[in-house]
Image 1 (cartoon, rainbow, N blue to C red):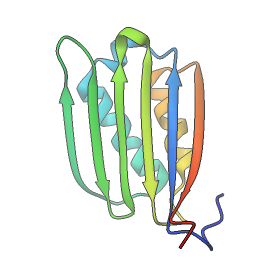
Image 2: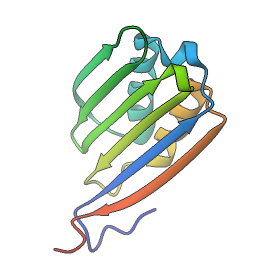
Image 3: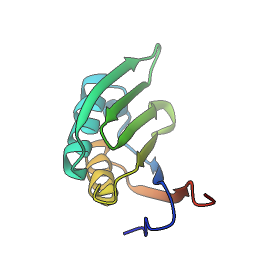
Amino acid sequence: MTDFTSKLGRHVLADLYDCDPALLDDVSLVERALRSAAHAAGATIVGAAFHRFAPQGASGVLLVAESHLSVHTWPEHRFAAADLFTCSPSLDADAALTVLRGMFGAARLVVRDLPRGHEL
């Protein structure tokens, strides 16, 4: 768990590689995955927006009481980029990423964890 004593928030950036392209191109599945990830993290959803692109790909964002979760997909590259920002130390980013990895069938996950507001 990241130490929140000296910063305002935590921004987790996740690159999901070798995903199932059919799953990444299904905006309904992308929505279910993001909502399931938010639930697993312990987030409180307060708003949502999802969009399917032509000819392929989808994006979604959940506004949560603790900040936001988002995902953008590139089925043609078997890739998804996920983003979780939180100002709450109780949000479980690892649980959210486990859900996304499983639901997208990602073979590989690369995570960057950034403190926000740490110079205040």
